[in-house]
Image 1 (cartoon, one colour):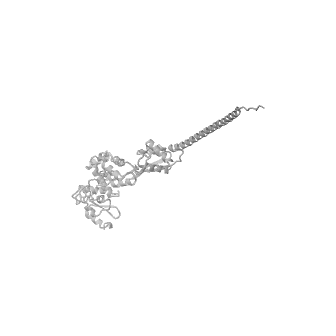
Image 2 (tube, helix red, strand yellow):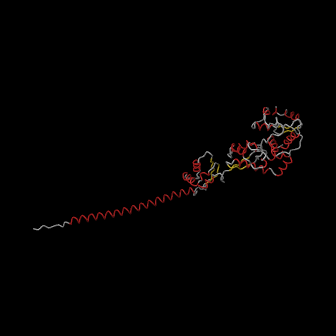
Image 3 (cartoon, rainbow, N blue to C red):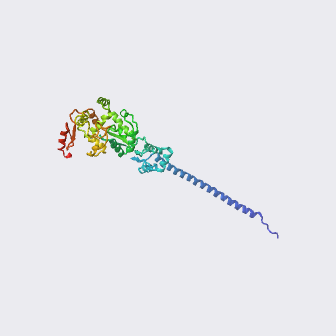
Length: 375
C-alpha cells in the first residue's frame, strides 16, 4: 500500500508566512513609535519656545522698564561702592528685577564704567540704559541740595559746610582753592598755593549744588556770583578809594565779623579813622577782636590771644591784616566803600548786645566799667 507523501515545503512555507507577518507587525509598530516621537518632539520644541518667549518677555519688561508701578527714589552712590552694591540697591528699591541681567547689560553696553559717585533721583520709567546714564557724572538726574552760606563765614567754615552736605570734601575743596587758577581779574595778582587766597571772594548766598559737586566747579559758582555782584559801579568806587579790591574786602570782613549788621557804617568809620589818623592815640593799631578770633579758631578772644605773633593780630601789627578774615556780604562791602563820617575811634559791645561808640579811650573805659560783661 503506497504511503501518502507530504510536501516538504509545507513547513517552510508556514515558517516564512509567520516571519513575514511578524516583520510587518514590527514595521507598523516602528512607524507608530516614530510618529509618536515626532509629536512629542514637536510638543517639546513648542513648549521650550513658549517658555523661552515668556522668559524673554519678562526680561524685556525689566530691560525696557515696562509694566512697572510708578515710583521715584533717591539713590546715593558712594566712592567705595562696587557695581554689585549699586545693583543691589536698585533691586532693593524696585528699579530693576533681575540684578544679573542688569549687570550683564551694563558690561556689554559699557554702561558700568559710566556710573560715578553721587546722589541721583531715579524712577521706574527709566530702562536699563537710562538708569546707567542717570548715574553718570553729567547726569541731569543728580540730586541737588540748597545751601545757604552765611555772611562772615571763613573759607574753612564754608568748606566744612559743603562737606557736611556731601557737596565735596574739605580736602578736595582746599586743593581746588589753592591750586586751580580761576579766570577772574580780581584774583590775578594773588599767587596760587594757599586756599586762603580766596578768603573774601567766596560770596555768601544761597546756592544749588549737586551731591557730589566737582570741587573746582563748586568754588567757581561762588566766584561767579561775587563777580556778578562786583558791578562796574562798585569797581569804580574801589578805584576811587585808593585801596585794592582785596583791601576793601579786608575792611569789609572786619566789619562783617564785628557787627550783627545794624551799625556797619559806624564800625567802618572807626576802622578808617584809625587807619587815616595814626597820631590819634591809637597809633595805627586797629585792635579788632575779630582778628584774634580768626587766629584762635573762632573762640572768644582772650588777653592771651593778644600776644599771638601773626600779621593778622591787629593788637601787635599796625594797619590792615594782610588779607580778609572772612567772606563779607554786599552790605559790608558797601559800608567799606562808603563809611559813615564820624569822629569815633573806639567802640564796645554793651550788655544789651549793641555797640556804643566813643571818640576817646577814657569815654570807652568809663562805659566798660558800667557793663557787667567786662567786670
